[in-house]
Image (cartoon, rainbow, N blue to C red; front, side, top):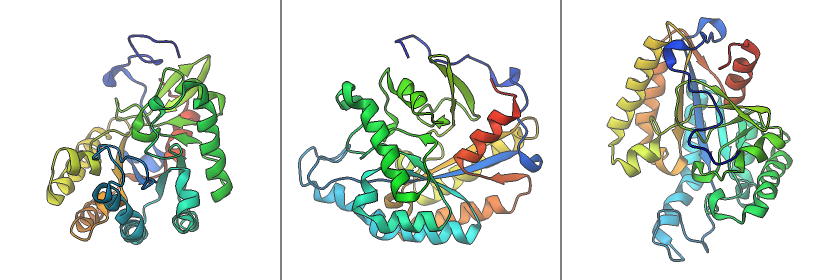
Length: 289
């Protein structure tokens, strides 16, 4: 995409859009995204000290892979939620046990670059297409399923990222955090779905950047759900819940997620879906904008 003052999509205000209808008449599609990330100890941690080894910063994240992931795996099974694993390719080699467990649970895998220590805007632009392809290929080899979705490490892009994604035939991208519904982006004459992700509710943004307590994060999820559920009586909405094992998985935080998912389960007219399911349904509906 060429540099421009607005993105490669139309500005369509929410009240003027075609109605989105979810399966079974659901008001809201609840999309859980679990970020399965890899951070090499011998490289600086994003938002960390800037030196290596950043023992504290790295250890927090390693806790997520050693402990937090496994708690969340049980929690999602308990509440019957499908999950989209937002996956760094590097973790396929570093911790294949995690990949195996997510695959056995039937999760969707979304490509998330090679490592969160390597955001797209900081790599050599001549190699960006190769990095994207390598990430997708590695995840496919490890899981037996080729990802159809992409989120860049840190949700960063270059002016060329979307061109590379459509060239690789991806269905959707979750980097753009400007909506509560899917919408179409047009790049080089080809289409790719922008899937809502966002910072709210998002555990790392809420807890580590805005300093929410676990109880406040729980209420954030419930309030977001209630608003979208109400609006969903007119047109289908999406509630993305972005989680990280090192943030949501500690013993004193996971109960907040547990209670929030139980709250959602007490409602009818909810479609618990993966990113792929939501994007495919949106495209097939024909009511795209």
